[in-house]
Length: 615
Ligand code: ARG
Image (tube, rainbow, N blue to C red; front, side):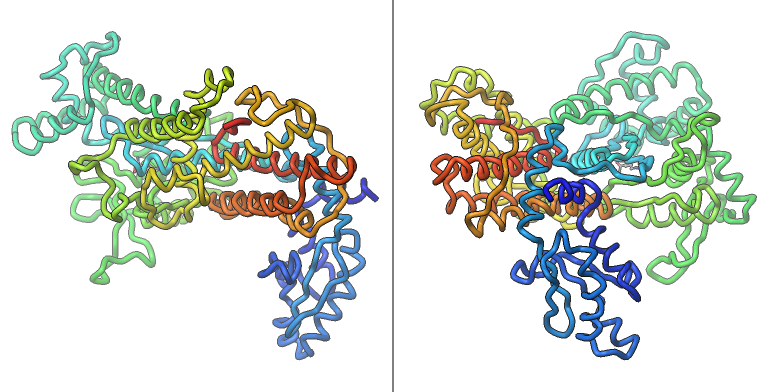
């Protein structure tokens, strides 16, 4: 019986399995089955809500309808679920059998790969994730931080699920602003215009940008030079190109520092300039298809459903009157390159799905670009383009996020501050420890906790809402925070370390990072309600991951993490592990610890947060 149940775990995700079973129960289609997690745990684990609607459509009695459904369902889910219960007007409540739970959780604990018996997806997709995407010579701001953190998590989840993920950094490295920057460099840093020169130190790029902008706004001669500068750059003149490359290189150094602090890996830079050679083509094709028209010297696309406030049609500009191309033009070229063009001929990605992680302020831009791309045939019909919008980061007072003197906050300072507070906290709480290996690692741990706190605070909010940045809240040991989750993990490690004889007293010499040997899974025996509750929660893991894969809301992972650690606490409050009544019970409870720790570790890692075995 053990092996058959664990096959079920590795064969299908719970909801899918139930949906299939419910759908096969005639006359219900998969869609009509409406399987959802139970609204309250007293009702069971899942519910099927189809009977009421169906009864109405077929003019049947809803409870009879539910009864028929149960007859069909019963044999298909008998291994996993208790006898279905019909409740209220015709809800079908389903509850996991304890035998299923114990086998499934033992299989999770037994998976040495760390995947907790989660199978890789059957249909592998190519998924491009466009995220981070800061702008050259400008400040990388908190919006880019959100994009980076959310984008990185989505990539990790999609990759874990088994997809082929391409991480693209759509850096703003092209456009008219480079004219004024290049001309400013000509006067202030002439060596930067020498082709194949050594790296030039341009100092603070934000200061440089502001100075160039000031001249552009105040000096008409400079403005003319700047306009000519762009044209020369776009024509590939060597001096202008060299100046541009100097700027890109200097910005890249700054971006890299942030990526290193955040442990962002695999992000490829493919900036706006990459698409420059294709922009003219895009506009020509839009014209040929009758989609682009002239308007006041510019070339624009009008689309159904987009109007200004006064009701007049809202144009999407694809070429300005001076001949320059727009942000939207670049995105149209990028869509074609990412979805339509083949890898062998044109270096395309042929992605099945493309995600754009930016602030919600760009929603309309993406809607228009997606619609135009579809209309123009720049994207195959089966490819999915999705904007993944997020809200603003605000100060603790709900106002614009800024320093006390009103300046924009530098990301490096922000991250360093979180690490500093975390380090201070760790040192004060471990003031008495003599554990040498721990003390040696304390800076590294402060990094994990501090950066983890910033990431977790961002990811635990519904990404579409604005959130208030607060060091106090994100570094708190209570509530749904990274420190709380990391402590929960370390505490379970402590229990397992002791229970499996890897140390003999509490204030031990255990290494802080990863030295624990996880005991093999034992047979799980249920002796208390809280053990069942914990297991009912643990087996939801595949559904949580599948939901994030589909809907792209990382806070679902944080909610689940929090719930899991609470279920664990309730279990641990009632069930001693290391003083369990029998050896069998102790081994069983240790297995629950292993499965819980594995769940926390996996999910924290998917959020880009490392775990620590001792804190
Ligand atoms: N550079 C843009 C910004 O800072 C974000 C680019 C997003 N990606 C895209 N394909 N448009 O807002």
